[in-house]
Structures are given as structure tokens and as C-alpha cells.
Image (cartoon, rainbow, N blue to C red):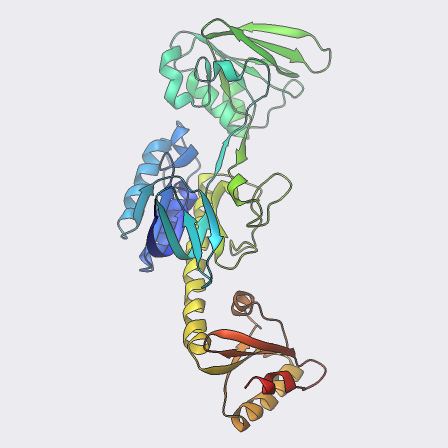
Amino acid sequence: MEKRIEDYDVVVIGGGAGGMTAALYAGRARLKTLLMEKSLIGGLATYTSEIENYPGFPEGIDGTELMKLFDKQFRKFGVNVKLTDCKGVTRLDDGRWNVSTFRTDYHAKAVVLATGGRNRLTGAPGEEKYLDKGISFCATCDAARYTGKKVLIIGSGDAAIEEGLFLTRFCSEVWVSVVHDEGHVDANEVAREKAFNCDKMHFIWNTSVDSFEGGDLLNRVNLKNLKTGEIIPVDVDGCFLFIGYLPNTKLFEGLVDLDSRGYIVTNVDMETNQPGIFAAGDVRAKTLRQVSTAVGDGAVAGYMAERYIGDLETIHSDILSKDKVLVYYYNASEDNDRAVLTKLESYAAQHSVDIKPVDIYKSDKVMRILGGEHLAVSLYKSGKKIATVSVNDSFDLSRIEANL
């Protein structure tokens, strides 16, 4: 089956808070933008029952409702949306990127990776059997089914404690397995105090999951005391796992740099090591993963994608569309660099060839896009790089002259 090809300025992969914000910024800049999401617009934020730390909502807001507002806003700027699964990202011969799906290849000048993460599992025996049969990751989704029943939470971070508090509205008992010593949880101070003062919440300290048991449905979680080795059976009606998540970056291994945990490495401009590929949200290596930080990432990624495309247009009009042009990468703040530029301008005039100085003082993006080097001059003919020489220690342009 021959694939259909569609052209875009920007393709955003992932429809969480970071991806939607990047799409909003790109769309508002009047770039032809596509947002691609394989499952649920809004991402993991839609599973959060109450968000109290997102600015502008002093009374807090349900995660699903907040994401609906995001969704409505970015679509206003003409962003196209495809509910489809990305199969890969590769570079095209013309420098653009190909974002591949089962039926269509989307060609883009810039790509934003905002694929978020997936829930982390304990790896304990019986876990796979009881996924969606007593083991859950979403209190908002499943709280009602446990009305008047006993549940166990695994984890003690913000999500674990905050979602546990939400479950107390429905459940008769909410037990929490914590790997730390008594009194120590990883949640923020506000949630911690609420939990410790809630008579429906109970803590089992220094424990981790040893196994899951039951019949057709889960009815027991065996915990292991990390200090004594004692197995503690806990009879429950359901279990919620809030032990973090893993970044969805398997698809991008070998494409962009990842850290030791699999998160995408970027600079402060959300740029990856690949020119034209940006990252935003929970998929990026950073300290804090919240809706607010994802929004910040997405804003920068969308803005820098616009800047990158502007650089591409400059490259095309000033370099690639010329019959012959010399491209010189220099730092305008350096005396030697400016002196070389003066010589090159004289040389270009003598040989009737255009010259395009690329100043890297404030930004080296154009140089990186073209694969150039500081104090080097390249000859381009009809859009192709013909020769490159360094002019740092000498002014020998014989290789350039031989190809003029």
C-alpha cells in the first residue's frame, strides 16, 4: 500500500499539556501545524481528580476539565489533529523530517516530541493478571466502583497521596504502602498534612509489594517489610499504583540523545541534539513534572520551532537558492573573525561570487543546521555544499577556488 504524504510546518507528537501548548504557539504563529495523539487528548493530567497548583484556578480544577480548556484553545488556531500512532521519525534528503504512521507520512520542517510517559509497574508476581481486574492507575476513573470498600495505594508521592485523599470520599478505608520509615512520605507538605489528619487513611511503613493474589479479581496484596523481610498480607478490594512512570521514548532511541533513565535531553530552548527536533513536557529530562512545567516547555518549544523555520527560510533564500555563494561562520565580537570577513568580502568580489556571513555571536543555530564550523567557509552551488576550508590559521582558499 502506497502511503499518502502530507506537508506541514510543525508536527507535534503527543497531545498532553506540553504538546497542546506547543501546537497552540505554532498555530498562533500561522504555521501549518499537526498535533498527533495515539490515545487520549490531555494525557495523564486527565486522570487527576483535582489540580490545585495550576495558576488561575484558586479553587482548583479537575484535570479533565482543564485539559478540555487546553483542547478548545489550541484548536482555535487551526491546528489539525490526528488520532493516530507515530511509527517513527526520520530525516528526509531535503533536511525536513518524516513522521511516519501506518497510512500516512507527514513531512515537517520542525517536530516537537511530547509523548509523555506511561505508568510504572511493580514487577511483582500476579501483577499482569490483575491489571484492570483490581489494579488501577486512576482514582478519578475507578473510585466509584470501590464505594464503601477497602483499597490499597502503592506509593507516597504527590499523585499517591492526593489521589488517596480523593479515594477517601468513596472508600471505607484507604491504606498506603510506603517504602520509607514512619512519618516520611514524598508528597508535598499540604497533601501530607491532609493525609495524616484523615481518619480513613492508614499507612504501612517500610514496605513494598511482594505479590498480588486473588481469583478472577484481585483480593489480596502481599507486602514485604523491607527491614525484617516479613510478608504482610493485606486483604483489599482494589489496589492503585502511583509509583511514577517511564518516558515514552523507545521510538526515539538513536534519533535524539536520552539520559540514563530514557528521558530526552534538551537545552533551555527545548532543542534536542537534532536540528529541528524539540521536546516538551514529561518526556524531557528535568526536575519537576507538572502541568505548569509542561506548559512552559510547550511554549518554548512552539516558539523555537517558529524561530527554527524562520532560519530555514533564511538559509533557503540566502544560500540554497543561489547559483554560487560562500558561507562564512564567524563571531562578530572577535577582531580576528571580522578581519577574515573583510578578506573574504574582497575575495568574493574578485571572483564574482556572493558571500553570506553567518554571525554566531548570539546564536549558532544556522551554523548547526548547515553542519558548519566556526571560522570555516563553505562553497554552495545550486543548493549543494561543494567544499569547506578552515580560515583560522591561513587564508588558503585553493580548494574553494578550484570549484568556483
